[in-house]
Image 1 (cartoon, rainbow, N blue to C red):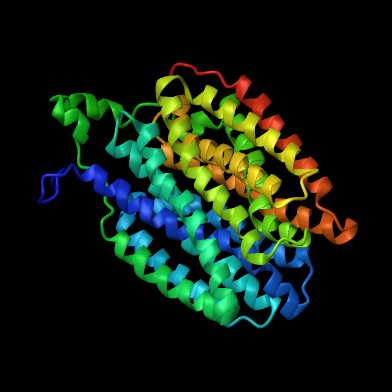
Image 2: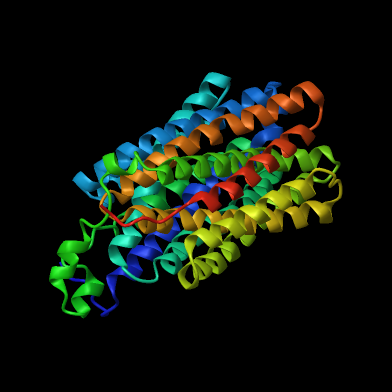
Length: 405
């Protein structure tokens, strides 16, 4: 196994490119769910809380299986795990084009799409394996695919809905997802030992030591930092999924045209890319902890801003600030785990934090939908999200790096 392809390119960059493309498809299609909210409610008469339940089930399935997919990837390799999940992801979206009941919705989007998305953590864990330096920057490039997907797919889906109706839109999404994810999966693999960057320095012994550097999973879960990691993930995903599921229909409720409302998600995705790259570089230059604190501060302020916002420009401004903060947080969790816990059990620790976070992602949109169903407004939901964002900020101050032992 070589570290370079036939053109002499360092293979770590191939990994980053393939992972970024897969992130684009996985998260671009997932975040398009909010665009389909209004068509579902109009055709089936479902409440917002019931419709949001499919997203909740999705994130719970996703969070639980992230842990298992990390272990399967270690055993079978990321290529096979991601290929199978890519097929399941495409099937889930194909069934979305044929749904007729909430049972179909929960099975296709909640279960199958959740399973198909689950190798998210193995994709992130590939980066610190191939790069021992500039992890923040490389992670930012991979996760920029997520932002690009959120920026491109929802407005495309909205346009397809207006032209071909929502069922045909989901059929197009299913075909594109299947082809792109399965094709990109074929380029994924673990690095050989010694690590490529260490080999350049002739330090094979260093790699043998580094691959086991850090805490075991059993050691990590006994630390305060692990508890804080779980809370940070919870508060982050509660806010994120609540907003991405409900922001479009919230904008439509303010008499903003549907295609314009979909731009709120596009701006979140575009600003997310900028936030990932800016905060990834800030983390490399200063610290992950500082960059995460800045991101939580901006998210909290943006959520306060959206409470009285009723015009297009104010919602677009919110989306830009929120997306930047989201990108900063998203790119920092993987290197944060490497910094505070090492790489010994990186994938499992990160996946477990994501599992706890998925609880927030699951209940967030349901609570937001229930609040609207009972009050006719998202104001209380936005206030709750802002409070959680600021508690996340407070938690970053409590993080303390300790020697591995």
